[in-house]
Image 1 (cartoon, rainbow, N blue to C red):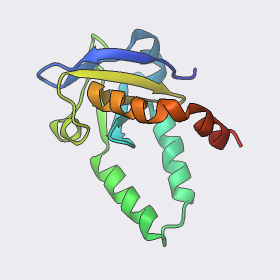
Image 2 (cartoon, rainbow, N blue to C red):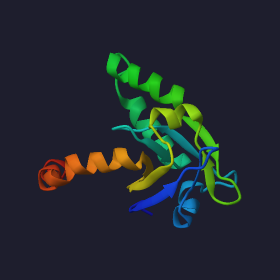
Image 3 (tube, rainbow, N blue to C red):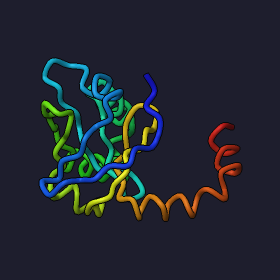
Length: 145
């Protein structure tokens, strides 16, 4: 199942956020019911199922470890990535460190991005959209070459 859509959420004082019901089984497709939360791009956090996280790890393993950019990204990404359990209400708890990294305060958005969800501070997402929306056709042409 492809992960798509935008879901407004409120992050509580314990940094918990509810995952949309239709995505819970996709993200936590194991009996242990856990996901990976990691630094994303453009100031977001990324939420991966085990399969999607493994696919990303495999792709990264194919990159040249002699490249300082690859080493730097790998170190920073894996050092901050965390395994997080879904609770009985379908919520995850984001660590304080990751919440600060993404500037999460209260109003947030979960955004479906094919094989993972991105967690955005609402204001940061609106600024991102404001910058990119007017260039949607240009972005599409570049992405779909």
